[in-house]
Length: 291
Picture 1 (tube, rainbow, N blue to C red):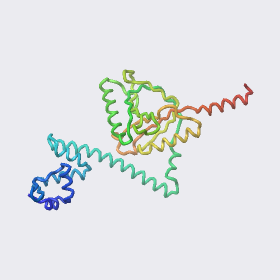
Picture 2: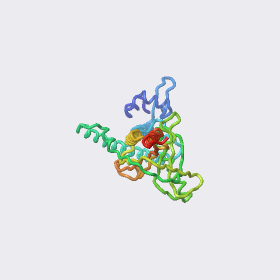
Picture 3: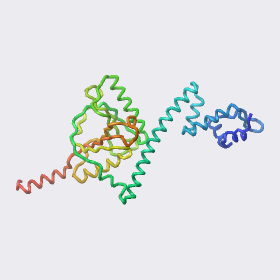
Picture 4: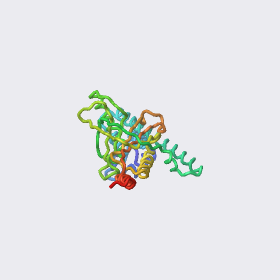
């Protein structure tokens, strides 16, 4: 048996931390002397402590570690699944961080040239286009900002399962429609959709009509810049939005080697502002002399 001090020294964990672990039920002393209150740990518990430390290094929370250690299922199988999932999460984080580093390097070059880091806004292409009616199979829900990555994954997985199950035919790339302009306490009103050829129960018609279109190549982090550019354009040209802005994902992170290869089309359904139309109509009557 090892005293708490000996156990602490071997594991490189403070006695205070060991007492906290015992308090939350993560790892309990093998023996507590009733008379002195001294805590003792067994040699076998060193392995448990090493596992706890390894999982902490991988970013697991204490609650997750406790659930794994105390699982009634096969520990090795549960650990393998947990580590595999964590590996995928870390790879996504690394990919995102690499994209951020690339952006940072680009901004440093721009600043060194004496330009504004927002000068790229002028290079975002904006064009008017007519988008024909499409038939959407969709899931609409309120989504909190932090929950978007999981919502994308879960909703599109459910939609693709429905397509396979009902033998439907995809007509275009997956898309997301944003039906609210900002986040509310309940989340953003979001519709995850896939255009399909068949009209069946659960689908709806969507006719965007005249849209402002921009194509973003690169990380999704740059999407706010596209929104800003489109908003500036419609204000200057006398237009206003008339329906939900939507993004079309030509590809996704699972299909590319780096975020630089991502292609996202951004569409904003628009119409001329009424006051602009009225001014043009009044100008016509003034010139023609009509009453």
